[in-house]
Image 1 (cartoon, rainbow, N blue to C red):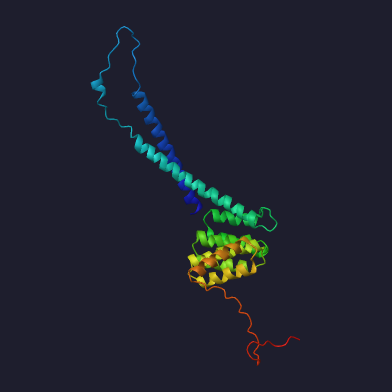
Image 2 (cartoon, one colour):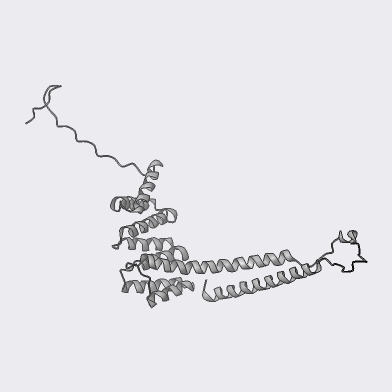
Length: 257
């Protein structure tokens, strides 16, 4: 969604919510005013209420149900848009903090410009700016992970996302970061690309080479599940070497030196 469309939706939802709230409040106030009990302060000539007349309520044109439903729907739509934008902004900043090698948030204007393009819905432009930034800062592999995330979630291009993750795994990363990137790539292989053989091979590599990580523990559990399902053959234990052949009669052992 581009920036102009998003602004137009915000304005439309805000105006709709304002209209429905105003109409609901005004009609509700009118209903309460007309429904107020009219009391007679004359303590001598007290009028007896006409219960037969009160039993037949008059038709009203308040339409509180319709105005209330419109108010709820418009506010819900506005809230969802705000929540989506806020979560995207917070998620992008959290990702930068998590994956920065120095443990500090990114403050580069070039990278911020790429994130602004992403926020405006210009995903391909954002990817290109991120690639340019990554060439100048190759250690900041969180940018490569961000590119893979855009391919996967925003562009729904799962093959391109997998290729980005494969490039990330070729880099020298901390074990935990490498492991979770591998797990995410395995999920892409199995759920989106129908490449279970690659997923199994990567899980085995993760369990063997990064065995002390939490991601490796998850890989071992997944491999054990696949073994139970008969998809992955169990690891064969090495057989004990056979004793050397002997010409001695049965019951005689070779003399120890």
